[in-house]
Length: 444
Image 1 (tube, rainbow, N blue to C red):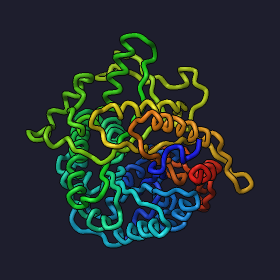
Image 2 (image 1 turned 60 degrees about the vertical axis):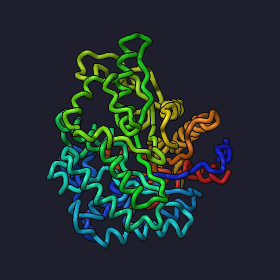
Image 3 (image 1 turned 135 degrees about the vertical axis):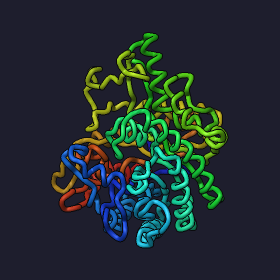
Image 4 (image 1 turned 30 degrees about the vertical axis):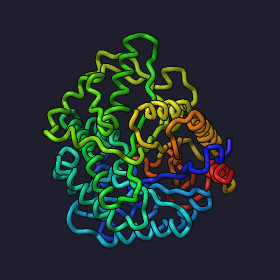
């Protein structure tokens, strides 16, 4: 397998996110985000870690973009920090924040690297959360203002835009389970947050398309193939319900199919937050969607789980020996299954894999980081992407997660996903063997 097997028009890249790498959380006018507030709460982040410095990308961006160039990676996906650009969430624009992203964009272009921007990768300004955040329908308008600002300031050089990163994750983990910022729980928070996020995708898509008619406008979705534990009707039905929540809840309204209420009746609760014209506003024809896949999920029927009546069965309980630092099963077929699933929608736009990667323990030895498990993971997943490509499925690019070891949300700095090793104390960078492999692969 060589990169040319995928075709000359296949897009290769690497992905990152502002809060996870930038640091400089109080520098040059940036205000707190919900993640700054959440990480300050005792017991919320593994080892009490925080992102006040993170990978210091704010100061070291030029060197990190040099590493992208050294690894022959032609596309760099990164997000903008909303509180760095609009510290209050709306209104006044922070010029030092604009200047920073202009420097990042220009540094990419100077090295022949194409920037792909994600508008929202979870760092909502805390001032807006104080007004209800994603549970407040006004968030759609706030995001429209922010998107219009970004399009005006960066659209002359940026041609690829993504609206949201993984709405299922930031609404589920942040507004239902409370394990991510802002730490809210229950359906009374989840349903409005989820609906407003879904509504925002189309609304902001229209803002970007109006402002930048030549741009490619997309959004991204987390996804995991869902398998029943046993070939029994109750487990099969549990898998259907879990799939509706994990994979279908956000994409289907965008495609004009509505929420998958027929397969997960609990989603009827979202109707309380819909206004008369919402069904017309939800659909939007994106130029592309990003799929973000790491593993599969296996589920069993469980009466005691409210609403879903399904429970995930961890890999260790299924006798799976090889898992990542996140406890995820290494199951490369999952990425093929998800490309197949999303390609089957009759009106889905072109698909890019905008995140895929694995965290494994890494050690520096003699100035090198040998990480054969990560390299094997990437190779095996790419083989499945190539399989999909050769079958004529609708996949047109692959972005590895992630550039550098970084702040992995509630897991802190424990899991290392990077192609580049980062020493959190010294900020020393070392391209791992997997990064060297990726560089060589992209030359092939």
